[in-house]
Each structure stands twice: as C-alpha cells, then as structure tokens.
Length: 298
Ligand code: R5P
Image (cartoon, rainbow, N blue to C red):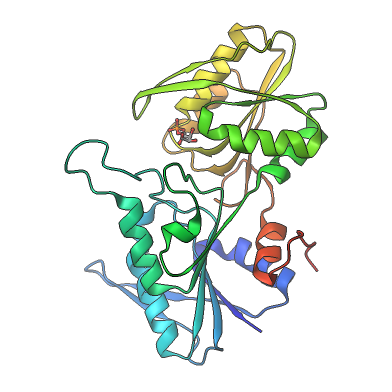
C-alpha cells in the first residue's frame, strides 16, 4: 500500500483521494522561519511507495519545498515516489520565443525527473512536446484528461449545448468532451498580443440562439474566455457558460469573466476555487490504481 503525502492547503483533495484509494494520508508539516526558509517534517518511517500530491499553481513559492519533500522522503524509506500535480505549471514556455528566453518547460521537467519516478497530471498544456514522458525524460509521465468529466457536467446542466474551444489548442479537449456526450462543437481562432490583450475570432458555425459553453484547459487572467464570450453573445448566443479544468482565475479574472455576460463559471477541483463543481478524484484514483476506467470513491 502506498502512502499519500500532501501540504496543508490541499487537504480536501488529498483526503478525498486517499479515501478513494483506501491509502493512509499524512500532511507534510511546514514551519516558515522569519527569514523565509521552510522546515518540513514528514512521517518518520515511510513505505517504499509514496505519492506526493502538489498542485503547481503559484509554482515559484512551492517548488523548493516540493523538491525538499521528495529528497526527504527518500531518506525516510521511500523508493518509488510519484508526484501527482493536478495542475502542472510552466508547460507553456516550451520554446525560446525570443533569443535568450529560458525554456522553462524543459528545465522544470528535468528537475522533476531528478526528484520523482513518475509524474501524473491533468490536461497539461503540451504543444510542441508530444507526451508527458518527454517532459520528464527517463521517468514515467502520465497526462490524464478531465474533458469527459467536464463534458458530463455540461451535458447534465446545458442539454443541447454547443461546446466552443476558445482557441485551436483547446480543440482537443472540446472534441473529446463533445464526442463522449454527443454534443456539437466548434473551435475559435485566438490571437494573443499580451498577457491581458487577447482577440478571439469565432468559427463559421452559427451560434445564434444556441446555448454556448466555452471549454478550455486553464483560465488564468480570464481574458481568453472574456473575448470568446463577448464574441458569442454579439453573434446572438442564447447563453454562454464556461467550464475549465484548471481555474487559476488570477487577480480580477473571475469578475471579468462574469462581467462579460457569462452565466455560469464551472471548474474542476484540480485547483481549489469557488467555481469547483467537477471532482478529479475518480480520475486520479483510477490512474494511481493503474486502471483504465475511472473508479468511484469508496
Ligand atoms: C492557452 O492557450 C490556454 O489554453 C488558455 O486559453 C490560456 O492559458 C488562458 O489564459 P488567460 O485566461 O490568461 O487568457
């Protein structure tokens, strides 16, 4: 049996996951020294198989302690350490877009590969890199998708919805969700000029009178969703709802999305947020059991 370790700000997800798996679960104790360093304390005797749950939203503050926790776990008996990072940061910086830029994805992947034997995540933003195995060279990388779960939520709450991907990259998740639940789908074209400067061109598909649901992997500043929602409403959509795997919603993002006329904003609990309605626990539990089918929490 494996041991699940987590940090105090992810207790809800960790407890639900451990319950689903029937595994023991322990919180990694943290003490923050006045100078900004952290002292970690793990259970003193660990089994050979250890899983550390750590979502990497706000990654810079978390990475040092995560790497320390993994190294400490090995000293305390762990032989096989899996990182479960429902949201994996730095996946978008996958090439040097201008000379001199650090390719963060590659280097973060190398750091994780050195610390962990496997990395499991959900809907990583892989673009120029094909698989999670390529992200963590020499180690096992697993990319799960929450798209069918998001699609199920949409099908239950917006019958006959038109699923709209706000950009080409989201097309893969929209297609998966639509196929799994017999929904119509279409894909927009996005032009990003800056962090908060985004233009979205709608596809030719008619949205007039349709209940449109925008589906994306991540909402960060929310500007992608805002642009797509405004476009759909201008073209006569009857309603616009939003569903995302990772609701980062930084700063005023959530208010901006609601202010654009979006009726409901839904997200999975991969990142804790008030919009969480879809649980990723069955997805993660199935992956950790090595099963192909999602399992129900016990
Ligand atoms: C990028 O292409 C992703 O799929 C999202 O569309 C993007 O990260 C959302 O970012 P923001 O909320 O800042 O527009």
